[in-house]
Length: 109
Image 1 (spheres, rainbow, N blue to C red):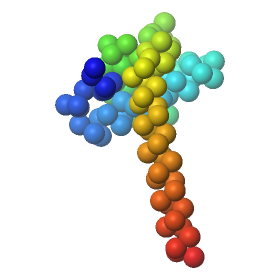
Image 2: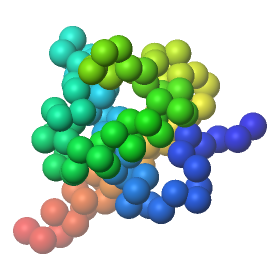
Image 3: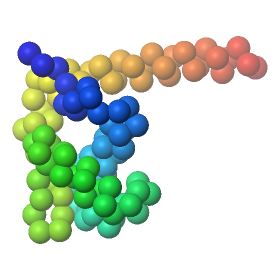
Image 4: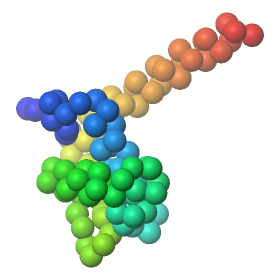
């Protein structure tokens, strides 16, 4: 089974930008106040054309959908087995990084 959401051919920086835009959609949807292109652009600080292109990518991958001018999550995609594995992997990476940074912080005192 292919275990990636974003194509490996997409450069790392572009992947991060896409993820941040996806996170804006998630924040707005989960907060009950879905974001528009303009609001996402203001949050992320990228041009409107970039936001539109990234949202189109996320929509083509099945992560989000659009109703009018607002964007929403496709929860069934995020709660899939791949989504849960990715969440666990990211959580583990963040836990390790936090532990390592704590050690560095203590050694600097």
